[in-house]
Length: 136
Image: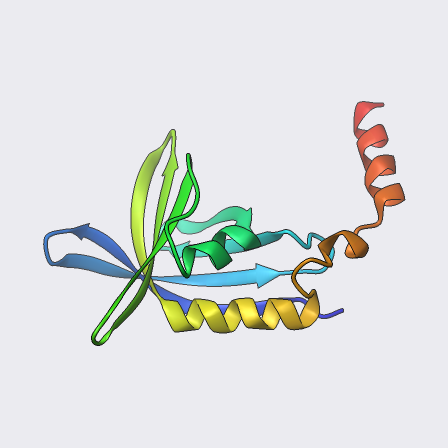
């Protein structure tokens, strides 16, 4: 199965009216059916975050997440944004995405792996063998 990929521009909120555009590559594969990767392309190189597909889905309609990644929508006349707050020991960032672009990406992932069927895409024997190899 071909992975799902999308490239979108996010807005890094710097405070006040200041912001910077940050391109991001979103990725999804059936081999890791619960996870979405976001590769942020910065002048210093790519920074990759992995978070739950369900977190993004929930964040499209209400505030979701706790800890390192939180997501929430902001909608109104002429506004359809999805905010991502990312935190790590190295710093934090507030990013704004076009809500419809994220929705389109998620819809493509559901065409590959329908919601609720993620478990049927895992090869548990292979996962267990990999874990045992790591322990050896």
